[in-house]
Amino acid sequence: AQSVSQHNHHVILSEAASLELGCNYSYGGTVNLFWYVQYPGQHLQLLLKYFSGDPLVKGIKGFEAEFIKSKFSFNLRKPSVQWSDTAEYFCAVWSGTYKYIFGTGTRLKVLA
Amino acid sequence: DTGVSQDPRHKITKRGQNVTFRCDPISEHNRLYWYRQTLGQGPEFLTYFQNEAQLEKSRLLSDRFSAERPKGSFSTLEIQRTEQGDSAMYLCASSSKFQDTQYFGPGTRLTVL
Image (cartoon, rainbow over the protein chains, first blue to last red):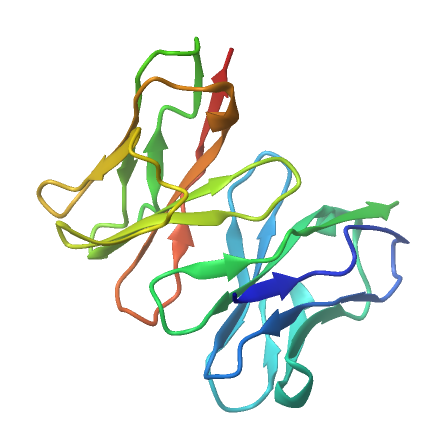
């Protein structure tokens, strides 16, 4: 069965630290890849997406992600986090069916 | 673009009662999805509509669950004879094309006592 793994369930960082959240998926065909963010009390919002082309994609609020096909990975990065980045981050994969398959999420807490 | 809206935002019910949730997608989106999210998990797919046609249902959607989209606009998700295991956040999403980004609503949080 297709699956998405997010290895870090809880991450605590100080402001200005660099962030990398891992996402691996299990599907050998063409995929579309997404990172969503859920701020406290808010709904899921799209951070960035990869459909095709340049494997390094840039999203909102200084986030970027790199698609490495050989590693089935789509890791999220940000060079310098801010307190306002405290949220839960979800990786999702679309593999040609109607649905997204989500990872279990990573809770990020940024200390001021 | 007013976004995806869901109503109610919170629902508390007693076991055995029926509940119904509503989702209004982004107006020009003809594709609508329902997901369920439990604590510590990512959203899990429940069902999908293209216009008024329900094209896919997850095996998570037991026969106590039914979803409709009668005129291809808003959708309802009904749970009959609720159980404590139905307690979750029910999310609705919409998109304009098959491969397009799905936009999520704020969800309805169901608590079954």
